[in-house]
Length: 281
Image (cartoon, rainbow, N blue to C red):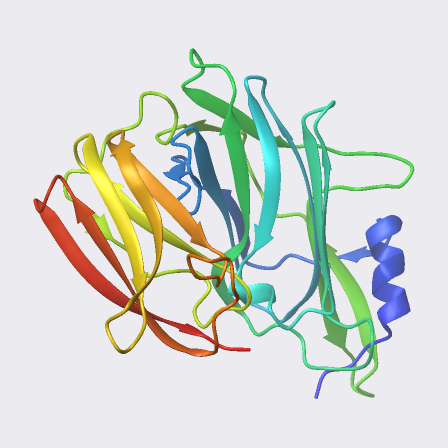
């Protein structure tokens, strides 16, 4: 079991002054944004951040700056960091910057993140300027406190004593195509997607795609086939859509735990589909 002092790693995230070692690692940002399936607006997009590394990773620091015309509304973390004790994203909308940091061990010793590749975070942007088709994202260096793009590893000597090692992966600024912006490609098919989260408590979101503008109804039923709630019954524009259910029936009463079904009818019977979801209290 690899162990180290969490205070030492917290210190390196603030003071980037430790030994350097060459490791095979990579840092990349998707060159194309994806529509935010959980948003009611096609002007909201998601940009994944991917890392790859060939040694166990114990912490990371990712300070970024993005260009004008968009607003960074949220940062969500990928499954790769699910076991980390500390994850944080400090968004500054005035300066168009975000500092993303993660530390594996804060509350006690544990294994480092095994070598691998995957998404560590997702940048959720709102496209404010309809004339903007791309957003430039680059890494920056900040002072007081110090931040720069680097990964933190532990190297162990013969006595199994850990030594903190910093590495700065190479990265060139990227122009991200805002495919989910106002000029987004519309869905080519109708689709009803799985609700998220599922199981859920107290609320869940139901995403779906409309390939053409249609009259849409989304209804919730119980296991007896009784209609619990009508969530949507209106004309909607073509594109990705989402509706939220707060776990209440048509009278505003919270329903009991169990399995429920949600059904979509778009275009007066042109597209009809049903899926399951579970309310778990």
